Length: 259
Ligand code: HEC
Image (cartoon, helix red, strand yellow):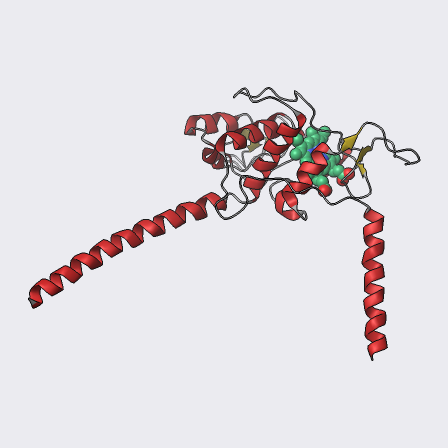
């Protein structure tokens, strides 16, 4: 019996060892994130810079299908600004009164509204793959949660490119060498570099700053309810405060009757 257990444990250990050796990527270094921990919160200027990078760089290839334009109000955009951002994109308008879905051979489209979800840069998966050497740029809405040590991994990935692969590494055509991507070959060209975008708030535009900002934005898209939960907490506290006041008044009333 013990022998069987031991063999099973050994096989498991060997198996996981082999899997790790196959992906052969270092553990991403732990970063300090303002949004983690009990008192963690999303810093609005950081989120806005992160959104700027998503908008100017990543949105060329990656969608955010779970985020609506109106969610950007959390980043401090006004209703009108959100409307403008949404209206830069088009969505399918649906059929007209006669059930027609085409105008002059093209799908009927309308500008996106604040209630619409972020519009995907590609019409479908096939179009996305054919523009990216067959690889699919994944939706980024939940990416910060989908990967182990999500934010640390995303930061490591975005800053982990090398111009040349190490000696002896066979890099396929159209692929890029990255320290942290499983297998080290990734179909995404390095999306960030120094001076990739010019920040509206004058923050120095370095690769690492860009990476921190966009990762913070992606942590927010993966858990925008974090803000809601905190707001809920404050409401609960206020409610308890009011309730305490009422109980105190009630207590005084009852006792004054007794005197
Ligand atoms: C030119 C297109 C393009 C742009 C621009 C781009 N990506 Fe990608 N991205 C891809 C493709 C293609 C893949 C899939 C790579 C693969 O499977 O080899 C990918 C994969 C990813 C992944 C998944 C990695 C994993 O572990 O699977 C993340 C995260 C990511 N991109 C983040 C970003 C961010 C953040 C930006 C903006 C700073 C960005 N990308 C800009 C094309 C792009």
